[in-house]
Image 1 (cartoon, rainbow, N blue to C red):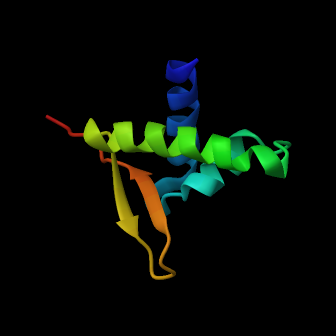
Image 2: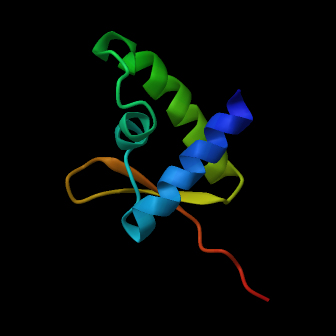
Length: 79
C-alpha cells in the first residue's frame, strides 16, 4: 500500500517537473474524486510520504513565493 502510493507520488512529481507540487496538488492529482471530508486524512498520509522522499534525498522542498511548500524530485546524479 505505502510503497505503491510513494511510487505514484513520485510519478506525479516527475510530471510536475522543476516547479514541483504541493501536497494538496499531489493528493488531488492522485485522487481526483476523493470527497472533501477525506482530504485531511489523505493530506496527512501524503505529507508523510513526501517527507520520507526528502529524508532519502530523493526530493527537495521549498517554500514558494505564495507561501506554500512545494516538493520536487531531486536531480538524478550522473557519474
